[in-house]
Amino acid sequence: MRLIDADALMEYLKKMWSKWDEDDWYEAQAKDAMKDDIEIVNKQPTVDAVVHGEWVSEWEGLEITVRCSVCGEMALIKEGGSHDHAYSHYCPNCGAKMKGEDK
Ligand SMILES: [Zn+2]
Image (tube, rainbow, N blue to C red; front, side):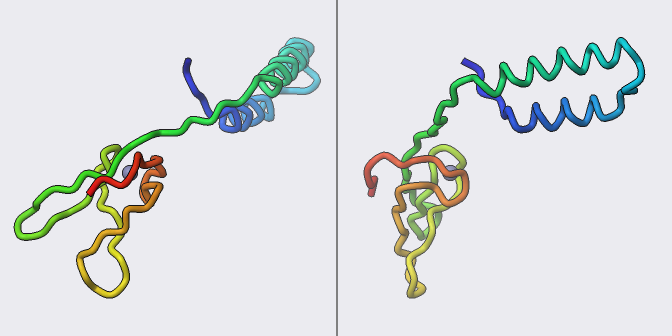
């Protein structure tokens, strides 16, 4: 399966046909055909593309850092100025859903 951004495709097609000449028979035919294609695309089922990751803790110098296994960005630090990481259920950077709470 290949996931695409259908909204981006629609924008692209609309931009493309906005340049076409309405009075040109061939271009009018092509535009009608494209409208049928868009209807087909819009009728397709949608899927939830959930990316799963986990928090990975490692020593970096004198500190333990907690990073997302998907994007590598650090977990948020809990309030209060300590180096205590917040093991959120989702990565605040890439949105990956985290498995459990790896400490
Ligand atoms: Zn991430």
